[in-house]
Structures are given as C-alpha cells and as structure tokens.
Image (cartoon, rainbow, N blue to C red; front, side):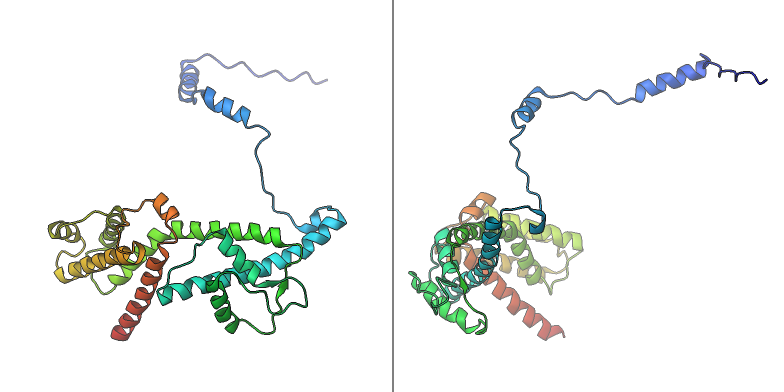
Length: 303
C-alpha cells in the first residue's frame, strides 16, 4: 500500500531569500492617493453623464407612429441640409467674388437657405421666394447647376428639424474656420516659398511656424529682425529671404484691406478667430485664389 506524499519543505530563511523579499518590497509601486476634490466631483456627477450609442433603426423597438415619422423626416432633412448648404456656399462665394458685403451668417440665414430648397406640398413649384435678395440671386445661380430631374423635397412636418440642422451647420462652419485657419496660412507660406531652396526641411518648418505666429500676433518687425530670423533658413540665398518678406507683407496688407476694411484686425487669438470667422472669409478666399495662380505659374515654368 502506497503511503501519502510528503509535503514540500517550507522555504528556508536564507540570506538570499531575505534579499529577494526586500528587493520585491522595495520596487513595489506606492499606493495611489485619491484627491478628495476629484472624488467629490465624480460622486456629484454620478447618474448625470450622457452617452451617445450608435445603433441601427432596426435594432430599436420603437412605436410604429414614431417609426413612420422618423422614416419620413430623415430623407427630407438630409436632402434639404445638403442642398441648403450648397446654396449657402453659392451665396457666400457670389458675394465674395463680386466684392459685396456678406449677409449676417447666423442660424437665420442658414435656415432660410434650407427652407429655400424645399416646398410646402407636391403642387408648389418652384420653391417659395426668399426674404433676402442675396439668397434669391444665389438661388438663380444654384438652379443653373442643379439637375432638373431631381425633385424638390417636401418640408411637411420637418420645419423644426430643419431649424436644428441650420444651427448645427452654423456651428460646423465656425469650427471649420477656427480649426483650419492657421494651417491654411502655413500652406500659403509653403506655396509661396515653393521655388526657394532652404537650408533643410527642419529650417523651413521652423520658418513657417515663426511666420504664422508673427503674423497672428500683429508684431511689426524691422528689416534687421527679418534678416536675423530668415538667415537660418536661407543662409546663402538672400533673394529667397526677400521672397519670404514680400509674402509676409502682402498677407499683412490683405488682412487689413479685406478683413479689417482698413482698420487693424491683428493680433488674432483663437477666440478672436471664433468671434470674427465671418470677417476672415475674404482672406481665406484670397489665399486660395493666390495659391491656385502661384501653382499654375510654377507648373508652367518647371514642367
């Protein structure tokens, strides 16, 4: 008959084991301290957080009446939002290219654009006239590029939803200008310096950042300061340094004449860009047109 297995020997208290235990205790992470103010804030917010979960309409067990209303509203709001946004862009570009003052770009303006591309019922053709003349003139231009086979959507029971869509589009336009305005300026510098030969890519990137920060800060620089800053990017090409200075002065002049209407508009912080985003639209259009012309001339000369 086999006997029971002998239990393992207890660990010996050798100097080696003691040393390992001390090392383990020494490298163990300290206990995490909880800030009382953070804990109280988290406790106060319990049950108040709002989460958005993306789900398909088929997965929701909705009331048939609600399902019918949403199924009717979604395609109407979608088409009116897309066409209303295109109409608003047509109106804005038409005014900018003609040198006219822009209408007040608020939620009312975008709501009128959204309502302009809809109709009240199936019998109404074309959509009703707008209260603003600029929208009416822009609508005539928009109809020339719109497909004649596409029917106008009916806005029945969707007026409030279109109002919310107009407010959301206004917020999206403002955020787009705020987020992309500095990057558009940096792109303008790079295109203007396309034919120049910098010392290195890092030097060119540093110069572009410095030009953007200096422009938005509104600082007036002397010619000696220019030579000190630009010498790092173009140490052996003084002509390229003059090109950079000319592009800077030119864009400074555009800010004063196009955006400020002769009045000083610089410096510009991120909050100022959010508040004056409508005033900055002529500057963005000028930079875009200038970039296209410069790129065309560069292609003709080098290809």
